[in-house]
Length: 78
Image 1 (cartoon, rainbow, N blue to C red):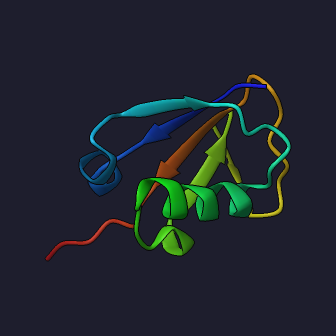
Image 2 (cartoon, rainbow, N blue to C red; image 1 turned 90 degrees about the vertical axis):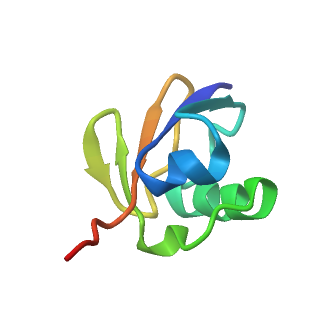
C-alpha cells in the first residue's frame, strides 16, 4: 500500500530528493516520522508539521493507501 511523502526545505537537502513513495500505509504520522528518522537519517522530525492530503494532521492520524503526506519543518530566520 503506497503513500507519497513530500519533503520541504531542509528535509529535501537531508534526504536528497523532494518526494518518496513507500509502502507504509497503516502507520500513524508519528510512526512514519520515526521510521524516516531511523531508515533515512532525517533529524528532528518531532518538530516537523505534517499535512495529509493537504490538511494539517496530528501524529495519531493513520495513513491510508494513496495518501500524500507533506512534511514541513519549522521556519527559522532572522
